[in-house]
Amino acid sequence: MKKLLATLIILAIVGVGLYFVAKRYVNVASTVIVMKVEEGIEAQDVIDAMMSKASEINMKYVGNLPLHKELRARGVESAHLEIFQYCNPEDARKIVDLDMAFSAYLPCRITLIEEDGQLYLTMMDLDLLIKIANLDENLLKIAYRVRDSLQEIMEAGATGEF
Image 1 (cartoon, one colour):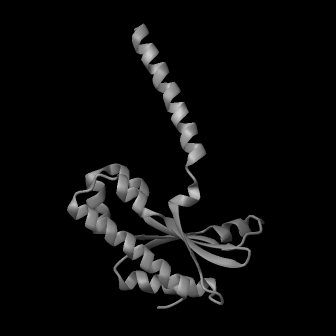
Image 2 (cartoon, rainbow, N blue to C red; image 1 turned 90 degrees about the vertical axis):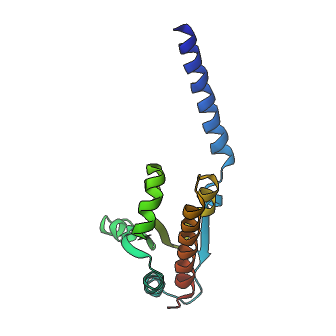
Image 3 (tube, helix red, strand yellow; image 1 turned 120 degrees about the vertical axis):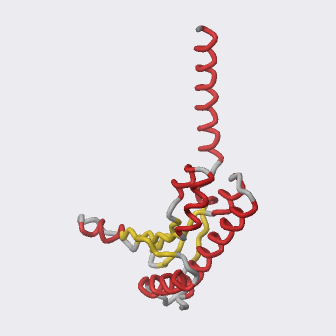
C-alpha cells in the first residue's frame, strides 16, 4: 500500500512538472494558422467567399458562433469575432471510429477576427494533430484533404474570391 501511494505521489509530481514545462514552452500562437484578410474586404465578403468555397469543395457548413453579436447584446463593445464550423460527415465518422477522442476536434473551425480594424482568419494547425495521431494511410489521406480544404476556405475568405 505504501509503495502504491508513493508511486501515485511521484506520478502526480511528474504530471504537475510536465504541465508547467509545457505551459512555459508551448506558445499557443504556434499552434494556429493565421491569414490576414486583404485590405478593403469587408467581413460579409469574407463570409460569403468562405461559404461559397466550402460548398464548392464539399465541406458542409454546420454552424457559426457570432460572439461579437452576443457581446454587443450584453452591452460589451466588441470588434468582429465569429467562429465558423465546417465538416465532412463521412470523414468525421471515419476518424471518430478510429478513436473517439478525435470528436473533441469536431467540427473544424475557422475564426474571423477583427483586431485594430484589420480582419484575420485563424484555424488550428492540423499538421500538429496529424503528426501525433496514429493514422493509417487511408485516414492520413482524409486528414490531409480536410486540412487542405480548410486552407482553401480560408484563402477564399482572405481574398474575398468566390
